[in-house]
Length: 595
Image (tube, rainbow, N blue to C red; front, side):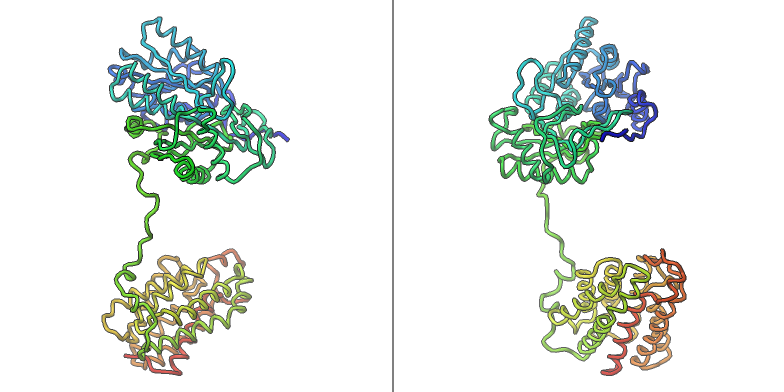
């Protein structure tokens, strides 16, 4: 059922003039003629200087195709754009005003899309301008490849390929070529480009109802930029299939719309029709390039992706393919100040992907140094015992963690921590370099990052990376208890820095901060390392339990009422206390920490 279209506008009758006002306020290189509402002409602010020794390039047509045509006014592209009402050709007087405003001794070229109204109005304006003494040439662009070869006088419609013709002509004019030379380049460009569009919806005219002509699950092939019917109505297909059909249609040797054959160089333009997100346009471009290369044997020299010539809020896209040579590429790469011409597209195309760089530590160390040692040192054995005890404590606590998290979060804390714990246990058996404490902690972080999603995964990865950096500052092979305490302190600082939490925020730091404080205090007081570690683990457990009385200030628990929070401790803090306590007990039961 059709419904009133939603638009962020004022009076539907004023949309074009208000668009022009906003455009010119945004881009100081543009101006408009003071002739509203009859004369709606956007022109270069430097037109008075440019017209002295350069050919003027003028285009235009009905509005509703923004950024075309006014968005392509600027040095190196259009000198002026004549704006009609929405989907309505501009009037002769407006076109004449534009010609008079920007045309100097070198003359002007009119680039006109192949629609009857545009041809007639621009044609009459051209003849009138000639009678006034202006030198005027006209190039008609009809790049539509969707419909069978036309019968009669209508011809192929002008579509987004016109933008490429604008760029070629604008660059030629900026280079100082004569009117005849500029017109010849524009005409040749128009003959080398083909376009076909695919629509998922019809654009909604300002103040009008939204059409439901296409219906759910349908797409229209070859739909025109004014909503006129296309070649066929079809079921919606994956974009890769749609792109393949469009390319075959444009490059069909049967219709021979464009003189492109295998081995040619081409330019690709993927154009959004108004309501298609940039992500979807890029997906289409990403599928079009390899198809052009592999299936059609073409070298793709340039790719332009974005919204160039739209149809109000129509969902869909069009693809334009232009046969390219070095001369065309130079014109397309030439500098322009037109605000909507894409930047960063010029130049030869490097490979699309390069290898992922390896960490410096991996490239600097041998495979042997990053594998499990054949024989463990005393420190290596202690590390293994502590890690195994810590991860088994998490594995045993999985259900409790999930239960607590189900009350104050999304209920997956235990499952997330369990994935990390089991990965650490499995990886330690294979390749942890346990005799190297810093690298072992680093590998624990890598195991966590690989399997643990969400906030917990990244927090523990940061925790391990910071500890690794601190431990690497030690040049001795054996890490002392004080150095372990410094590594814990560095990890806490990193988690607080990047996560934003601190003591009292109801997070894992409420277990680890008191543990770190007690560990340093007892070691400085002269306690043996095992005792200091064990006492600090008791502080971790007490800190975790105290989170029941805290109001959450980080994570999903911030949305939970204090009454509910008071019934359970923070799951993250309880998990941290559990692995820390288990590691301390395991060390106490096996060996004294090394000094």
